[in-house]
Image 1: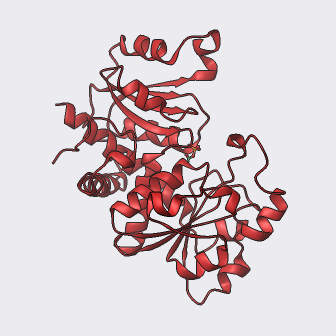
Image 2 (image 1 turned 90 degrees about the vertical axis):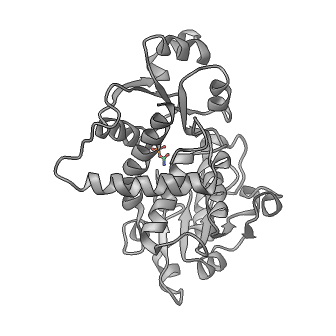
Image 3 (image 1 turned 90 degrees about the horizontal axis):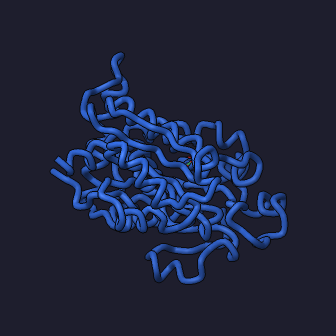
Length: 308
Ligand code: CP
């Protein structure tokens, strides 16, 4: 089977069959990653550039590791250490890199739509590693993989996405994916951080009460407040945000059931999650990070395979 698309720009463009194919291929790569020899020759002679115009820890290392496990040649590009600081455009930068016989581009950019723009201009396959407030498709896929691993299914699962929905590309990719795969989604947070028409646009439920979302859900995907994307204050203070919307152990222990806690990282400890929740028995946060490598191997493998 092949993916229906030659780029991974967003979950919005994927079919449920594409998502199933990526998740089942990721499960096979996860088995490979448990072996003493974790490397396979699948992308030998394929060259991939990791083009990061915005900071990253997890996504960047995870892509690089996934590429190395697949035996691809990798190049890492940081905008802050490049000729972008001398005024070079995105398109010039990428065309120069591609002229050195690079086959695939993994790209993170603070501008929403930057990878979509590039996809119309260059011949190489592009994987969106996060564009502004638009999408972070591999995060959505690794979150889904982690939920499926934990619960054995996505259809019918009740997922609460909690926090700064307005500025979160992770929320966007999760909503598209979970709705395509038959899960139920509720978004929760302060009214100023939830887009007004999200219920109609995305088919999700909305609540402004975190406790209500926690009582309803099987799994809560908790998001960071994206202060870097807010040009004016949208709530009174981080302390008040934490008191009203932060998740602590007392809140979870008061529920009449166990739920699973997820977070894409980086965590602002003591703001959206207390440490005893982030590091506690409800949390699968580090499993998400582990699964990210297998999911990114699957995406790279399937896109490269589509070109053959
Ligand atoms: N989840 C995530 O995108 O983390 P990074 O910003 O560290 O890549």
